[in-house]
Image 1 (cartoon, each protein chain N blue to C red):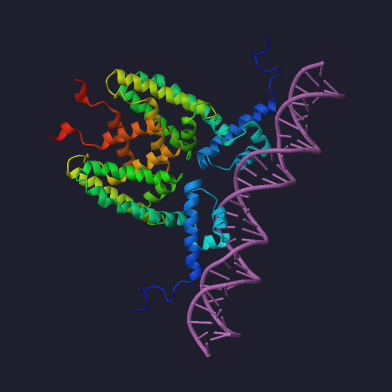
Image 2 (tube, chains in turn red, orange, yellow, purple):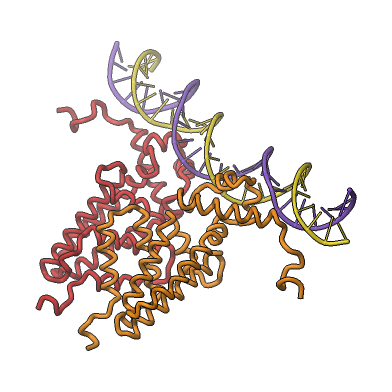
Length: 198
Length: 198
DNA sequence: AACCTGTACGGAGGCAGCATCCGTTTTTGC
DNA sequence: GCAAAAACGGATGCTGCCTCCGTACAGGTT
């Protein structure tokens, strides 16, 4: 059964090295200059030719997806911490904030995320990471609904969209005050009204 | 006192003609291909050189602002119709929908709008049209607040942002269902809760 | 240790769009 | 009609995208 299963040969050393360097450099450039940064510049700073970059990551989205993979997993990993709050409403709120922070860390990220989120077939490399986040969101929503804190009509996907939007707004450096009000407005929109159930 | 006041000479005929043709062509291109369309293509189709386009409208934003000017005024003109509803809450809701429609008519419009909206000094040609819309929104909000339909904490600017966001989401062709839920969610977020006042 | 094979490299090059500049054409006032 | 001013428009330089192919190198073999 060889090493792991699929590949007949183990990957060359320089391939792995280049991939790692590219990811690291891309991450830095995406953070500093947004996800629309020049890929040529990334390649140059990573010390490889453009051809190498495109061989490893055929599209900008593929590179972005690879960069986000790590961070995305970190985010989901925090689920455990958040869930231990016990309060499902609070958990949902924190989760949404965490996503928002995450999305707004890279300027221009919300656009490709949104584009990937709607697709059913993974025509974009970003679809999978997106789905993970949407599914996670849905879990929080359901938990909060079970506890009677969130309206039945709300879906995880909706709040994922909302988080995307907030991140997008933030990315256009809107002042924190308006952003906060909008955030509160959304929150009070999805919350179950106290008197309705009792 | 000459003709109108400022200019010593009346504008040349070809200038006006070119300007009009450019605006018309640009409008069509923006509608069809989004606000990020190639300006060279616009110039070409308008039958002028790139230089002429750039002389009339030094930046993409300037061209966009000029294109939107007309439509923007149409939108505000509808205020009268809407206000005659009598119901301030309904009026606000319709106004927000109208803005959303308007913004999502051109793909990619929300971005530059947002960018222009935050600025205080009109560093962007889009700032003025934006301010008009924000002011109009604020009027609706205040009217609805006076009638006790909308929470006191809400500002016109907030709902302008919300409309932008919805248009942005729509632009990434999200399905209408989620969009509708999100819209409802926002609406129920800014509405005053019925039992609070009575 | 030298070789050989196939894999990966990387830069040159073609393409598209932006924005500018300047020789030429057009318009207008006289 | 003429001359001056104003506007035209395309050639131009630049940046970034993405591909293609001759070359170099890693890794296994003898």
